[in-house]
Length: 295
Image 1 (tube, rainbow, N blue to C red):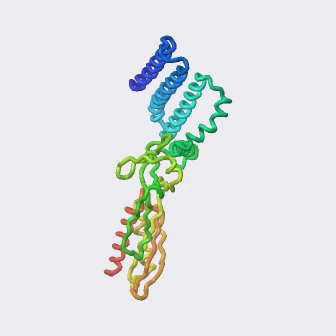
Image 2: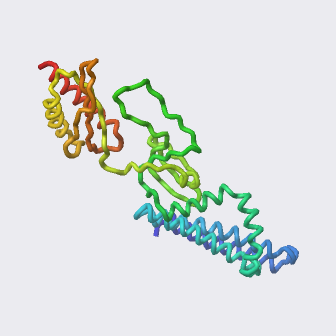
Image 3: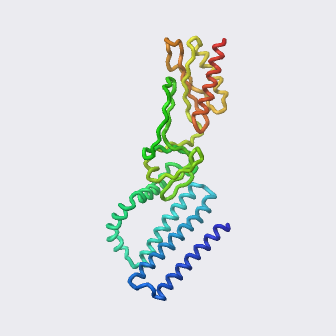
């Protein structure tokens, strides 16, 4: 057993002993009036219980993180949820409150607490939904797009042959999911904690696919034979290691005014984004076009 985990277990035992001694002294010395001693007991139970649950969840997290990260995160989530429920149940039973009384009196208290902690409860229940629906896993690279966090997409001058679009969102790797927050480490290596209620409402782009479709439009002079250009381009692009299979190349339109032909190239490329594969494809198209022009 690791030293860190053993120390945490010793600390849990110490908490139990200290709070048990405090409860015994309160009842034995009778310093506190009898009409409020029950309140003191329930406070002691809640404080000790929350401390024990948090430390225990840290121990479970250290053990579970050695295997599957998603499973470990789920185990920690369930451990904390079940621990808090047990602590509340023990506190109520020590206060001699029956289940029927809790159900009858919980309506009004639930409304008050729900209105006072609406955001926190929303994050809590959203975390439970995310836990079981699993729109993404720990370690996934995602893009989170939501209207709550304003991001302005940069604008460029008009590009007639570009089909690019920019997703206004936060892109990074999911590191952790807790009861209230999801932690994402952005591509610039800065972690960001997003409330679970925001994550549940957001559009989530999964960037885990090994290959992605890259589209490029390119214009060449109409003096170049299109069949020769297509055959040569397919042969050259197939040599690129990041391209899977044979690219699809066809004429998308012609311009009689500019005496040019516009080709569309679609290739299945390996990579986390379209930028680098598109750059390499365009460089090859430029080189092929120049070679035909020289001939």
